[in-house]
Length: 116
Image 1: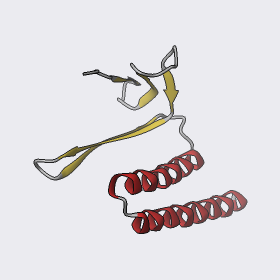
Image 2: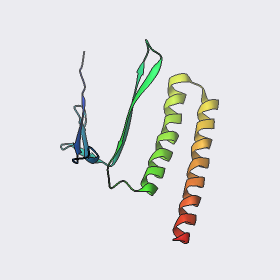
Image 3: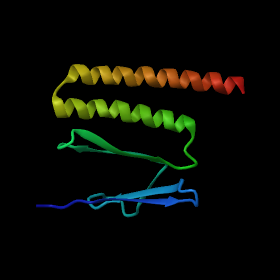
Image 4: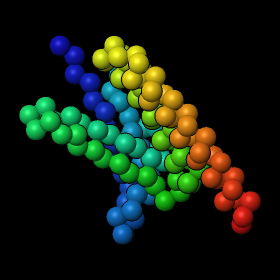
């Protein structure tokens, strides 16, 4: 049996707002810890049938980056859902939702930027 670990280090400011997020994985080929501006981690509790989540982002995470981050998470979750359940129809629905989400988000960003 092989054990693999993922370590996440969060540096907080005095108000406990994340300044930096760094992570590394024991099976990664990366020599140094990787930086991230945001993270979303979810765990499934099979006994309680609930998801436990950790969502953090740093002070310098821009709104446009957050929109792109959510789009990529939604889009790639559809692939994970398809692999895990073989339900390609609903996976496709999730992808279509992700595409509609980012289109609306980007349009709202353009509108907001042109108004300022």
